[in-house]
Image (cartoon, rainbow over all chains, first blue to last red; front, side):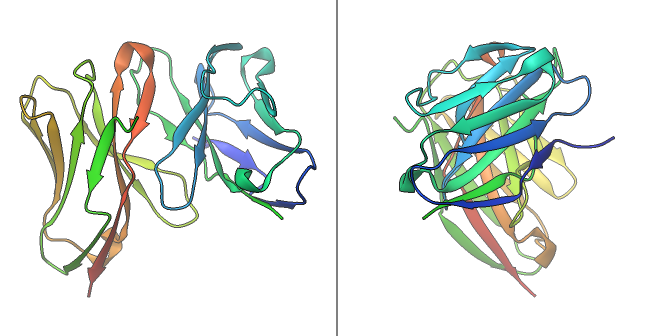
Length: 114
Length: 112
């Protein structure tokens, strides 16, 4: 069974430029999460989807961040415009329906804003 | 607000020794406590998890001890191996909300 797939693995952009990350969750997993992981810190939730509905986006900085999960499968996370402080690893995770909170993580996208 | 506090920040253990990582939580509504293992360049992977109706759970060399009254839980790695060298995160959640709150992580180094 394929795991959570994220792309790109690495991205370097200049500040004020837009950037987008893509996530393909494990097949059949209804719940999808985007987490932010700063260096030396634990992941912090940005947004959680149940199918195509964003049910928890309270930690998403909506002035510059947006996300979508069309058709309840793949998801994209966008930052526009990026700031220096956005440099971090962006992790996508998914969980099967009814399987409590066990989350399966992708390898992440490491973003560097210069 | 840091709801899950983890210590130590880093830990160095000799091969064959016991590694112990501690976490404390504040929210008494938490009802699921997993530990995740993360290798460099990889995403976190679930290692072992416990619910508050038991005080201990063991899977191979990994054991979670849980103290509900003290709001603390810990991970014990017996017979630590160099391959265990990684960053370990404790986490907590209210299962109905399906949202994990992570600790700040412990970087474990097991010397050969």
